[in-house]
Image 1 (cartoon, each protein chain N blue to C red):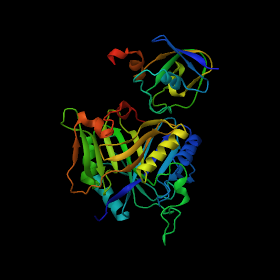
Image 2: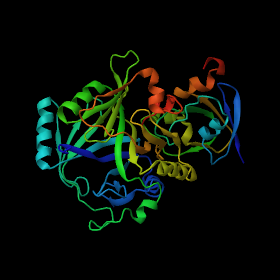
Image 3: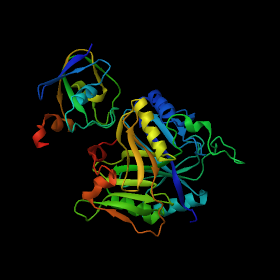
Image 4: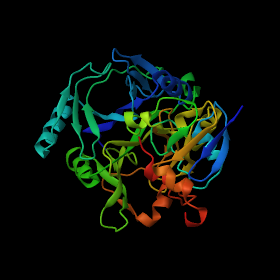
Length: 105
Length: 309
C-alpha cells in the first residue's frame, strides 16, 4: 500500500510506495526543473528534512549528510523509503525548484 | 606519431557506498571483467579488451567519488624522469610501493591544484583480453556480457584552478589542449579537454568551487550502435540515466551519461575526432556550451553543471 507524503513547503501531497524512494515519488509529480541527480545517494542535490513519519534508509554519502543531519532527519530523498505517511520539508538545492512557482523559474 | 611519455589512462579508483551492489552493477550491467580483490577489500575490474590487469577499482566508503586517477607511462626511466620533472616544476610527489595495488608496479602520486590525486606508473601485469596474440579473433564472448565497453577512455574532473592544472599537463606531462569552453566573460577557460596521444581527450577538467570532484569516468564503445545497446541495457536494469543517447559538440563523441548505484557518473562513449599535437585548439564560447554538451538538443543540462560526486 502506498503511503501519503506531504511536502509542507507547498502543501502538495503524493503517493509513495514503501519500495519507492521519496525522490521517485516526488519526481512523478512532474514538477519542472526538480534537480533529480544521481539517485544513488552520492551527489546530494535532493536533500530533505523528514518532519514526521516512519521511514527506512539506504546508504548515502556522508559528504552531504553529517551526523547532525542524521539526528535531525535531514537526508537525501533518493535513499529514504516511507514506512508510514510522512511529512517533509525540502532543503538545500532542491528547495528553490520545488517551492518556486513555475512562472518565475 | 611516436608515443612516449604518458601513454594512456591506466586506472581509476572510485568510492562506492555498497560494495557488493556495486560489484553486481559493474560486472553484470556495465559488463566489466572482475580481475581480483585485495586484502583491503578493493575490487579490481578491467574492460574486456584491455590487456592490463585492472583499469577500474572500487572501494567501499561512506562517500562516493574518486580516490585517484592513474596514468600508464612508457617505462620506468620515463616514470623517474616525469617524477623529477614534476618536482622541478614545484609539485610534491610521493612513491607508492609496487604491490600496493594488485599486479601494479611502483606509482608516483601527486595532487593537482584542482584537488585531484594523480598517479603515474610504468608496470602492470598483462593478463590479456582472452584472445590469443597469434591469429587473434576480433572479439571474445566477453563482448556480449552487459554493456561491455572496450576500455577506460578518459575522465572529466571538476575542481578549482583549472588554468594551473592545464599548465601541469601541457608543460610537464606532455599533453596538448584539444578543445576548451570559455568562461562567460571570455577571459578564461571554464572547461578543457587534454590529450596525450591522438585520442580526442584523455582527461578533461571543468572549473568548480569544490576540489577533487568526479564528474564522470568514461568507457569506450565500439560503435554508435553499441552506445544505443548500452542505453537499452541501462533501461532494462533501471540504471539512473543523466543525458543521452546523444552526440557532444565538444569532441564530436557519442554519449550516454548515467550513474552507478552510489551516484558516481559514468559515460558510454564512442567516436570523437582524431587530433594531432600540432592542431590548433578548438574553442567554444560559453553561450554555446549547450551545443558543446548536447549538439542535437543544444541544451546545457543543469545536472551537467551541478551534479558531481
